[in-house]
Image 1 (cartoon, rainbow, N blue to C red):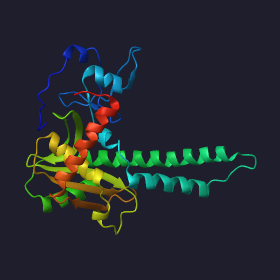
Image 2 (tube, helix red, strand yellow):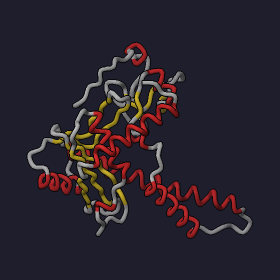
Image 3 (cartoon, helix red, strand yellow):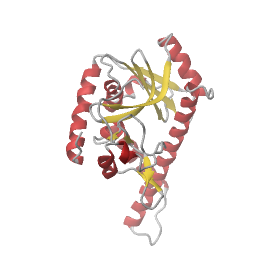
Image 4 (tube, helix red, strand yellow):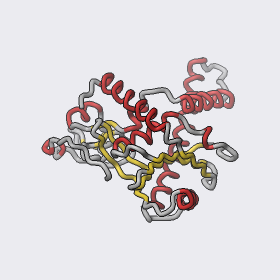
Length: 265
């Protein structure tokens, strides 16, 4: 990790729990280790809750913080899927409108879940490449692009951190020189302009990573991979001038999140 926060942690409390590192949760220890799940009183693994986080001194993830604000692109995608479900499903002869709406929502949610799983799979394939455990198609394309645009860099993949400001995260890819990269998967990328794919929340995420790692003047890159055809990879290098704005936006949301959740750091 390239950042160490200066707060301590009660080891006696942590020792009473078993830590896990699945991708399902949104909490980090003050050493920057993921603590997404823990063992409950019944001896079974469960997701870490806000109550657990307050008790153990855990910090929320960058994406948890950003999740407090609306994401127009994502919301539009969800609405589109719901409309498609309504247009393709048949309403039963004796089915109520409320029942049909419920089925449409369930169908759209299933499509969203499938897309998320496919995105996670692609992300894992890219990660394996940068960890030296395989060379998938998208990894090779991304590596070639990085070699051309950022030569002689040594890349660190899937490293986590805890920031002094009271949040944590796991960075897809970064370099010690201060280049931060995040991977996203999307549909129908062929012929698209990568500058039209990025939103403020993407920039905020990368700026939060940079701030958490004490990098004041980062290079930020958003890389998009097509879910259906992983040979289509689009890369966007953010204007450095937008970092200050995105960092300020994230910190404002962070303070709002703390107030809403009654979370003290």
